[in-house]
Image 1: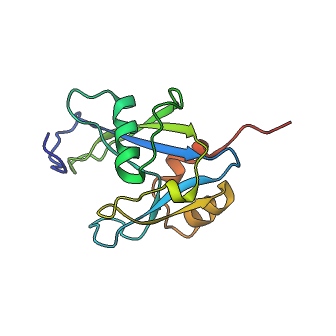
Image 2: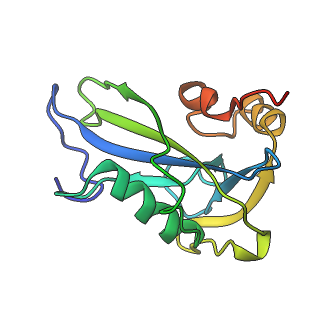
Image 3: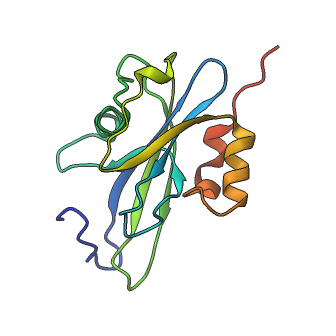
Length: 154
C-alpha cells in the first residue's frame, strides 16, 4: 500500500511498530506530535511508524526510533513485548501494532527529535504518562499501558 493511503478493504491490515525507550532510572522517552499533524496534533506518544514492504518489524522499530529520536537501540536486544490490533470496518484503516521496549542509558543531549514529526520530548515516569492519558492527550495509552510497567526492584 502507499504511505498514508488508507484504502484497505475489510480483512486487510497494515503493520505499525511502537518503540518504548526507558532509561535505567525508570523514566520513559515520550515525544510530542507536531501541530501540523492532521490527527492528534500536540498529543504525546511513543515513537513509531509503519513497517515498509520487505522489512521485519524488529528492523522497522530500530529504524523509526533512530529517525524520530536519534537514538540507536540496535544493541539493546530484541525488546518485543506484544502485539495488538484494531479493526475499523468501512474506514480502510485496519492495523496490527508490534510494541517493543528497550532499556537504554542515554542523556537528554543524545536525543535529536525529528522536527517534521515531533515538537519536543520529555522524560516521564509511568505516573506522569498516565496523567497525560487521563487528560486525553497521550496516544494509544490503553492499548500500550503495560509497556510502562517495569519489574519491581528488590
